[in-house]
Amino acid sequence: MASTQNEKSDFRYNTGAAKVPWDAVAVKPDADLVKAVVRFLVQEGSDAPAYAAALRKVEKAVGELFKVGRPASKLSLGQNVAAVEDLAKTMLGVRYASFLVNWTAGYDIALDMAGVKPGDEVIIPAITFIATAAPVLRKGAGVVFADVDRQTVNMDPADVARKITPRTRAIVPVHIGGYPVDMDPIMELARSRGIAVIEDAAHGFGGTYKGRKLGTIGDFGAYSFHEVKNITALGEGGILVTNDALGAQFPMARFCGFDLATPPPPTWLYNVSPVQARHGTFVAGNYSTTEIQAVALLQQMQRNDEILAARRRVARYLYEKLIRVRGLIPGPIDSADYGGTCHLFLLRVDPGVIRGGIQALKAKLAERGVTQIAHFCPLYHYRLFEELGYNRRALQQSCPMAEQVFFEEYTHLPLYDLPAESIDYMADSVTAAAQELAQ
Ligand SMILES: Cc1ncc(COP(=O)(O)O)c(C=O)c1O
Image (cartoon, rainbow, N blue to C red):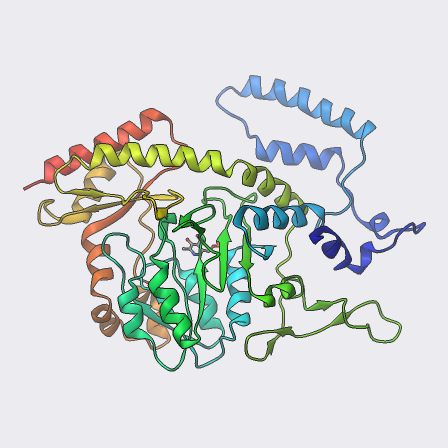
């Protein structure tokens, strides 16, 4: 179904049995292009002569393959993109899914569909990546920062309740590190006031909250497949999902408002329409994805359960080791209601025990060569917000927990496919650093 829709969404491929179909004018992949891609994807390792020998064999084989095969001729928005969307719908149990260039593109569409306009307010957590704020600001709307929960560093629903105003158009819970936000109170607040919920599930693909998939609980949800995520679409990619009927327009919203349901202007091939939102309409951008990204993402989506299981094993292992150390507060880890994706491992310290708090611990870890991924500073510290007239001091006062956890208590440890020795080295280094600083 999605496949037919996608192929139809591009008139150039509806040439049927034409003598000169559109793909006759495309520059097709040839053996040299494939070899260049292989050389990029599999780069020289420590044994240069062995690499050169193996590469020669592969390049010869690619040449052979071209003698008997035919080059791919549909490179954008084709059957593989549709297959990603079909698989996402099945895996997530959701009505509509659109594979786009990145999470931010999906969020942009969700904000438009939710009817976010200049002067509106969107509540986001103080601690997140800048992409949760920037598209809101680009629309001329304002962000309102909700404070975070100390245990999870996720949005605190009680503070969201305090920060709702008549101008609040959307609430954006962010499942930081893939650990689920407590969604029930947020959904209740939003539903009772007609406010849209857009889940930032950039880290959350495959995670669950009370048996429901992260990203499918709010009105819209988006996932990121950027290169640092659990799975990637060759560097960049995102999926936007919804159960709302507005999702039927995702193909239009992703590709220039291209409208094949409306008759085209006389003598022309297609029409272009505004996209319907909750309130009014909007003009679409172009966030189309390529087939090669889809091929890569499909392969990884199929392995997602296995990848998640491996991450969960490492997370539990780290948790068991670190929970015994005085002054360290690892996790939380999974429970019956909270099934995270273990994208990042949250580590907090008790600053009453660890002298100098998290900053001192991080300095000690750096001396031991342990990488940390502490990239989520409360956003209002960025110059951007000052320039836009946001009052940093007032925001710091309105988000006291975000201030405390960021400056004194939390960091993230990496959970990716590290060798067992590196995991042990990391756990032992954290333990030793904590013991040196314990008072
Ligand atoms: C919490 C969060 N939201 C959104 C994004 C943006 O995702 P993308 O780079 O796919 O647009 C990221 C990316 O790293 C993220 O960490």
